[in-house]
Length: 322
Image 1: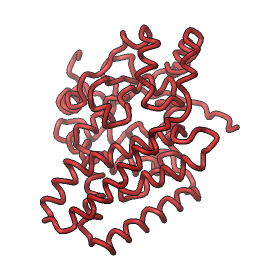
Image 2: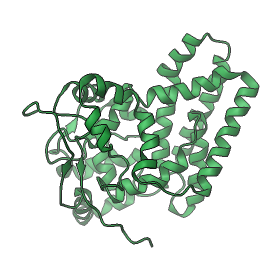
Image 3: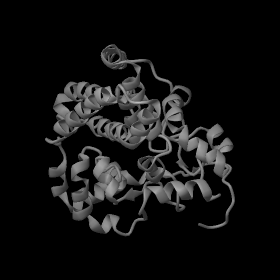
């Protein structure tokens, strides 16, 4: 990994993100990839099954002791909730019902949000488009840690704490880095979410509500699935800002591990991203990728050359809104 020297700033680059050019080259060579774009007909049924599984779990945990509430939140419910956040990620690209049914996608994301316990889907949609349009953009891509995060969380113990607190930083960072006006959809998202929370509390008490929210916080923090947060864009090798992972955890995460392919073709649903890699294999097979999200977390914590500063940043001009 090179000299073990703690980074003191981000990796500033003065080039465009690599995905735009690679997308053009691949489509010119393999125009059939366009047929992979469009809605995933199975997504709505898979997500609905996950939502109702969590509602059933709320009933089943209502009389458990607190230690078992937190155990099942981490081992089971939180895994489903984390998977639902990644379903919401896919839905934010309109792949549940297609681009012509944008409103259906937004409301379905609100439905997928219900077991997560806190409103999330509308705010995620609002900021995620910037992550694709301005990847690494200073003050635009809120996926990039702040200077304080990079400066403070620089030792193994502090990086471990940072991983545990990731849900907090992901939710608060946009308000500091790139604050935007609250939208009507965010208000409706919150109203729907808190209404369901109150209904669950009224029916079965506090424990199911804690089960949902604790699972979300725990499994978006220090958890094997959360390795994807670090694996996707943290610079493990100089010059590479996006990485894929092709391991079995993709089965639980809507193929979010196919991250180079996703940034190249964000309108292709996760279920078809393996086909992108298969068709355009020469563009991906020789790029660095991760073998294990658990190993990613281990290396991030204990390798002094890695930390919140290990991100590519660039200055981006605001695109004109159509």
